[in-house]
Length: 312
Image (cartoon, rainbow, N blue to C red; front, side):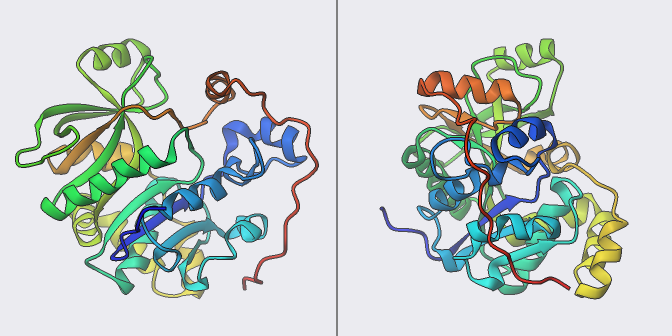
């Protein structure tokens, strides 16, 4: 395994409820658990595969994961090798915006000027080595352009309305290596005809894998979403008040609310030669399986879980 970037953090997002795939996960596991905890292929869950993948970027001691409080018992066996202080427990799921902001405030207390790479825990990657090479390249770009958020953009093979689309602009000035671009526009989940038009303009899928400095992202969040930022800071003050404050937060989507509003701060790194899928629907899983020429593992025993720590 190539050397990790020990001065960087990896943040794994595992707070999703996986409602779109509940029937499939019920068939596999006997319970409608979130897909990131399911072993859909082989012996590793999507979460376990993600945690293995990110070791090419950051060591365990600098890998953090955000979980929902009601998922800790389900996921404990899969994350117990991480340092306890790196497990970020959100009181409940309030979509990607609150989950990411909650995590960044946690990391900022420990390393406010660190560079962090964000990884969804429920995506399928066909070539870890190549994909993580792009992540490392994104971190190099952030080192050169510390005020940029570098997003990995996937070359689309169809006009899928379920993704965000990034329209690349001019090549990032002074950036050598694989193609990196400024961002002209960001469109979150457009209609199919619009998606086809965006692809014709060179649009890339938003993988939601992104690299940035923590202080840069928090500054943008505070400037663009001041009310949400202050409410989350209040929820972050202590465990007793956090649950009540967090439960009262309005859900908001990070891509739709923030990324569409900060295109001048974004850069996109075009990812080629890697099969990527968000596995958000049964059809998306079938497409990956056709590429793998394998069949889904639909007849397995219930997955064992080990009791996690008691949360009070």
